[in-house]
Length: 367
Ligand code: BGC
Ligand code: ZN
Image 1: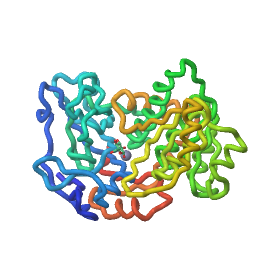
Image 2: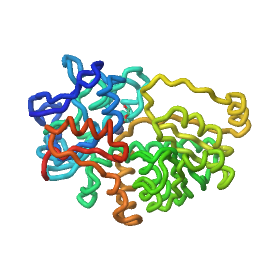
Image 3: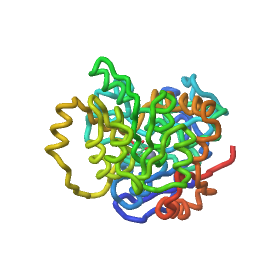
C-alpha cells in the first residue's frame, strides 16, 4: 500500500513509499484493530520533520511514514476487542509506551525516558497511508455526529490535556477559580483551547499576530472570545486594559512569546507551554523582574505535550458540546483539503507557503 514518508535527517525528502498492508494479527492477544484511513491531518510538526529538524525512522527502516492526526473506519477487530467494531469511526493516540514507570498506569503521554515513541513523528510509522493496525488500547471511537470534524480529534486531545494539566497542577492552591484566560496563538491548538476555556465559562482573549479581519479572528469571536492582534496592541497594553490573566495557554510556536507571557501572568496563575520550537533562537528576558514576580506571586509554569486516551475522550466530549454551543464554528478550522496521497507535494507546499491555512488535511479515501 501507498504511504507518504520522509528520510529523517534529510531536508525536503518527502516522498511516496510502499508498505505491506498490516493485519489484525500483527497485534498479540487478539487486541488488534485494523483501520482503513479516511483522512489525515498534517501540521507544523510534519513540516519540521520534512525540514529535518527532528524525527527518526523506526528501527530497520531508512524512512518514516508521516501523519499523526488520524481519522478512519474500523475494518476488522481481533477477538479480544470490545469497545469498537467494524464500521465505527475512530482516531488513534500518537505516543506509545517507551519503557518507563508511566506505562504501567496507561499513561503513554508521559515518559521518564529521554527517547520517546510517537507514531508519524519519532521511531514509529504514522498514519499517512491506506491502512493501519494498532492495539485496541490506543484506538478511540469518534461519534458519527462528529464525523465532519474528523482529524481535529488529535489536536483537540492536546488542547484538552493542556487545560486539564493546568487544573490538576493548580490543586496546589487548594482553591483556584480562573476567570480570565489568555490564549497566545490562534492556530489549531490556540483555537481549540479557546473553545475549551469558553465552554468552562472563562473570559478568553485569543492573541495572535495577524490583524482583523481574518478567519482565525472570526472563529475565536464566534466562540465568544475576544481576538487581539499584537500588531495593534502589545501583551502589556492588553493587561493594562483588561487585567492580568489567571491562566495562559501558550500555543504560538514562538519561544519569544512563551517567555513574554511570563511577564503578564496574574498572581497564583498558571502558564501552559504547548509549542514545539525546533529552532535555535536565543532571546533576552528581564530575568530579575520575572524571577521576583514569580516567587512573590506563587506562579506556575508547566509544559504539556501529546495526550492519552482519556484526553482524546474529553476532547471529543468538548467537541460535541462545542457543536451544540457554537454550531458550525469548529469545522471552519478545516481550511485546506488535499485530495489523495499522491498529492503529497501539494500537501507540503500548503504547510510551508499557505500562511492562512489553519488546517491542511489529506482526503485519503471515501467513507
Ligand atoms: C503532536 C503531538 C506530539 C508533539 C510532539 C504534535 O504536533 O500533535 O501528538 O506529541 O507534536 O512531537
Ligand atoms: Zn500535531
